[in-house]
Image 1 (cartoon, helix red, strand yellow):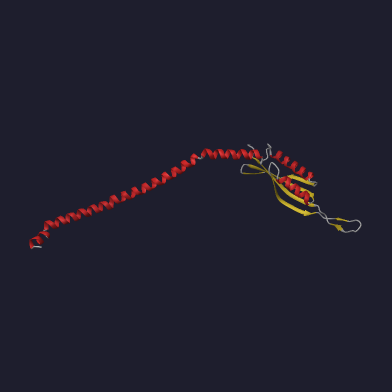
Image 2: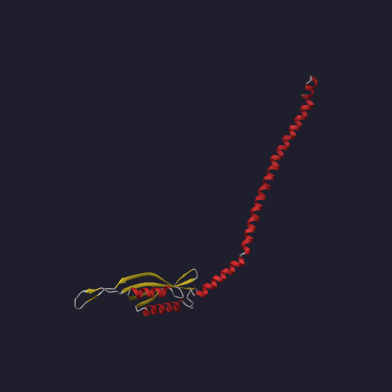
Length: 201
């Protein structure tokens, strides 16, 4: 390379041009960093948000599309419950309790047992249902008890057994031998629970 070319290469005019180009590149770089990159990043975030919203909207549309089928199924299930008669259909708590006591009395007598007493307990309300509870005392052998429990637990409307207490009855003393003979009889206490829809006041 000639001396003239070296001088031209390092001439003040050429150095100023390169400096101007460098400054221009720096300004462009700063503009890209300060404006373009945030705008692109924001655009990408907005696009991701839009995609998420579109996905959720599609989910909601699918759920809404099944709304009618769900409502129809709920009505069918409700109708089935009504037809199965799980709940007591009496108009008042007192009538429901009386009906349950009469049913239990018949079940005990038909099984060959003896009803000692029935007592209606205060009605409680839970989840818009009235809980009808009757305390029962009876005597009978194990076969009688089995038959009574079966009759109650397979009844319509539904009756549940709770807090059952079974104790053997004391034997009777034999007048000849003066010995107490064992007894097959049982003293049984339990609560019977039935449900009815809470009546509007």
